[in-house]
Length: 447
Image (cartoon, rainbow, N blue to C red; front, side, top):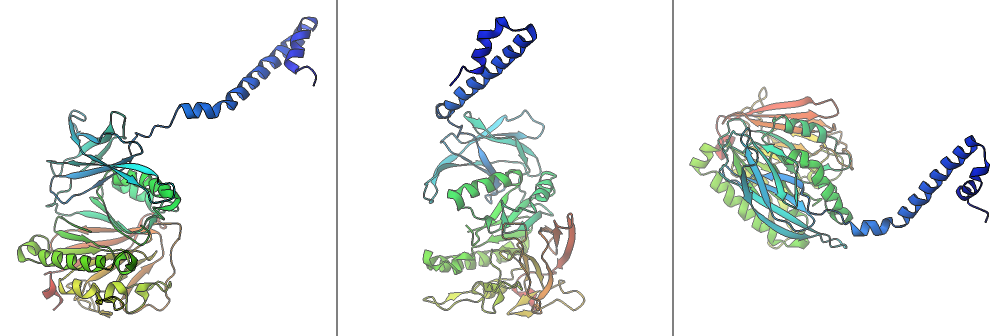
């Protein structure tokens, strides 16, 4: 095998010229370093085992509004059980001098690895609307970054929203612009109209975890309100709006129980009747629904909404009893705006009911419209890219775009509501906008 180079240098060092001895010594030091590094690498697996990763650090922080004035729910995840604490304070006060405790719930993913995590929820109460609060969450075993939020004020005069569906953690085209708008304080809330991450359950839910980490830069600052989509029930009030989140998936996944479809329909009917009581409709005249799969669309993908008898719109006749659709229910209770996603495009419809256009007038179609206004906003960005349109849409299709983007909505007062589509492909340009103007709301507004 011969003598290793660094040993040969050591044996002959005193018989060599001074410069040559220096070279040999340098070589010897380098070789010793290499051998030491190799030895450490051999034991690296043992070193990792003896120093397990920290699983008590909070992540996936997000806010939601529980529907109680002056309150906010903070939710986050850890992978080991810890306490559930939020420390917070009004902006400018002594930092974190208030605290609130909450609950922790174990969650076991249904994938084959049965990954276990812990979901923490803390409700903050007695918040002053209009004030700003700073907070962090976690426990003495690990704290999140510091975030801030502004409590939802149900009497807020002009609430501003971003609306979109179908946002994934691969190709999340609109994410950066949404992050900036959120942290500039432009938005009061986010409405994510189904389909998250693409898909939440993939890789034993690791895709879902990564998505929740990505949107933390939005959802930790404003309430992030959602409805279920085909890739994965509540209502709430803000300002002059009553917003209803519903599942369209109950019409498509009957194997999970047809009773879900009928229970949701009954719940929607009761809620809409309550929202239409004179005192409630006077306080919150705008009724807006958000569901994932639209009743109408003109994409060229042969989806349910491209047929006249859409399940969501018309119901299903292959159940016992027949399952009612939602179009008549929403029309009879004077729903003003219906927000949808699922189609990876943006499409604005003329006021429509029963597959027919009911504009307010030729010159001002959205002034006192005679039917609900539908908006499809499913182009926020995901790995499935955008869809194509049918070249021959029906008369109810008013504006279409395949640009990546999302929708702004602002309710200015009891009579005026603004909707505008932001194109991420065109550097944040508003490529479409309308004002819906209504002198009255409810079923009688259609006549």
